Amino acid sequence: EDLKSKDIEIQRAHEIRENTDREIEDLTASLFESAHSMVEQAKYAQANAEQKLKTANQ
Image (tube, rainbow, N blue to C red):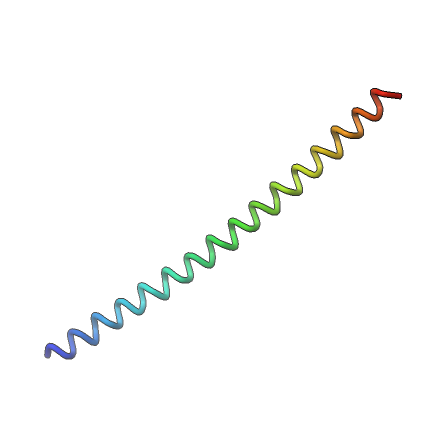
């Protein structure tokens, strides 16, 4: 009986660990996607600003 409850407890801990690992992977992927998007937006804004400056100086 005690051994069976320990097995159940270990199984629950294992499931929690797997779920946590999956959530961390998802959050990490989301973070990198957001960072990539921010970099692309910054590049676009910089190119736009440079073009406006070039036009203003002509």
